[in-house]
Image (cartoon, rainbow, N blue to C red):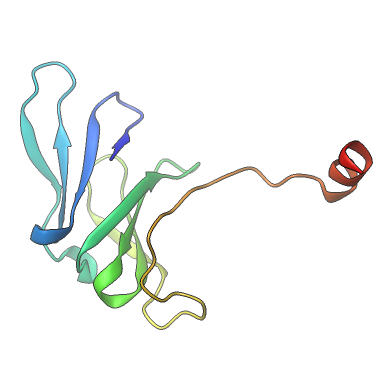
Length: 108
């Protein structure tokens, strides 16, 4: 689950191969990413990226798929099935890159 930029809750629904959206105002639930959209197979984890798009782990086919953060439409396979290092991915996070030199100076 993740809270989106609009304050709504988004849930990776692995068994239905979709993403649900829970409205923060009235608690209503709707489908944000349609079942199987873009090849979504067992949605495992999700996060909104710095670009505002929604990134979803598609565990069933070892991919990370990207969807429009505004309407849930499929954009592309950010990391397509068969990408090196993806084998049953579990979680996803975006972080800012730490300047290696500053990091070394501060923590060595």
